[in-house]
Length: 116
Image 1: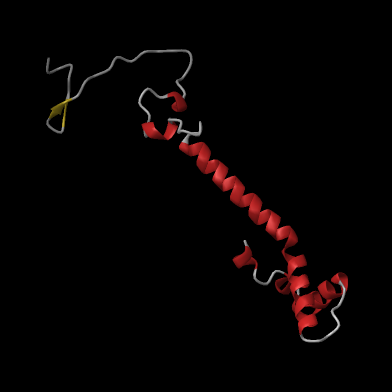
Image 2: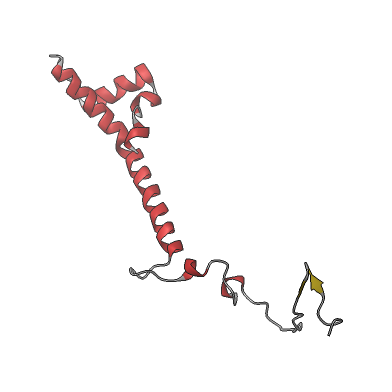
């Protein structure tokens, strides 16, 4: 019947009946997923979305952990270099204060991008 099936781009389109329900369907439970493989569990029991989320969270936590200890490692390396030059190395607090006074916060976090 030409009246009940409009033509779109030279092809006939099916007209689906409209049903009224009290509850709207969830987009997460669509009958036809946008990417069917995206919600299928892999051999490790996780979906690709879950694996990507875990990967992102692990990376974020590693950067946060490195940010909390990087300044101590910078001071430690400066102490080692002073010892190699034949100088008496400063203590940890004195070395950190020396870097802070001469170079500021940038000096304490020098090389952070390579470490993180």
